[in-house]
Image (cartoon, rainbow, N blue to C red; front, top):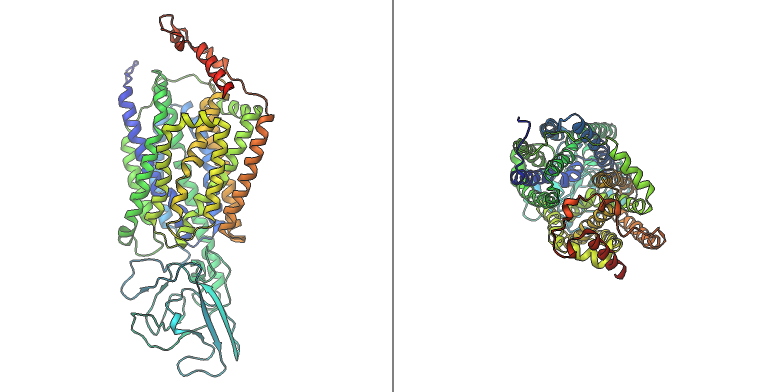
Length: 597
């Protein structure tokens, strides 16, 4: 390569836009649906929270370190290639993780010998009449469980009742979403329970179904009710030692999932920051960094297209790619294919050849600036709490939608709706910040996020989530616009980008990690609506504290003179007409307008 390379800015921007678009599609293939896949593996909310918390923690610490090494040793293109290749292969390890229930009942591509029965809407309870008699009935053995024929459309899981002569009881239970009857009349289902269903449209005897008592109630390993959890269905196979076998299976499923996710995140997380730093330095050599700010739109567009596209492909393709295990392997195959496409685009991605001499302690300086400035400290605490609350939505909202019979296409559309709302609101960014100020916009974002969480705790159907997704434009987009503007105003020269990276990677990532760890156990101990309501209350309390603290903080400098003095004389030549082009007059006028507002 020549010593004086040619800087083709237009071509570099076209390649960067395409790369961001493809990377958005790539991330959308798996990231929104990852926790749903982990649930289908049979993992309960605490284990899913641990896995997602580990993922966020690795991204918050490992990505900046890799970006620093790549910049120091001029190996950015090598790292980008290794990240794309490695993550494409590591994602396929998740497909090899054995599910806790090796014969999941929610697969839609079983043979004609299986019957899938859709239960009543969530909240409707079935009543099981348990009759344990010392003398056997004419059509059922002694100690059998009797299910009323008019409500016996299907039962999935093991009924854990104790056996005793002359005992009878009634026990209500919630009908599990998507449960299935895996056998026909007179055969045993996958849990070893003899079923004689009296289901409309199915040839069978009108008699009541007899059920063999297998074991006492099992602990709640996976999300949902005790009867419906995949782990319980798997653990109920067989009589003696079923609980021990299920615990061993849970251990291996969790360990293999953790190992696969750690390897995958180590290879994936550095890509975005390395590519962003490379493009910014490339444009900085030709003083075109202002054109770097519009590239985020292409990633959001790619994510919107990808999340809907992969969700539409899961249904028809999943049965052809896997005959056993949980549904959702199409997400990982799609991720690998789009990673290969992104690798081809990365060959032409702009990477600066000339090495810039920059201080290696930029992140440390940015962290010290956060600690030393009370405005940035309060802002960092706000982003930390926001990251923790957002993780509750990202981790478990699809679980709630799945319980309300939502398809993955609706889930993908709900994500795309929030992203497209953020794009459409962006033209009003300047007006919003001018009318509400930065503090007011942060407060608006916090209030909208709290309102979303409260709304999610009262979902009543699969479509009810869609109206709340529109608020994502304010709870995420407007909030981060205010944060970015505050960082630009409060940062010292040369620390704007490191400070922004600290907020997005370290602060927000750490909050999401802690929120995932805690959220999983809250869901297990209480419920998902309680988690949403607790996050809502926490955000509202912080919002009140945030607004009450702001007037008591030291007044910000209206003009950042250290930045203005860095403007070169060529940018303010005497040939410019009028006072509107004089930087000092413009700064004073902006300050005066802020005072009047």
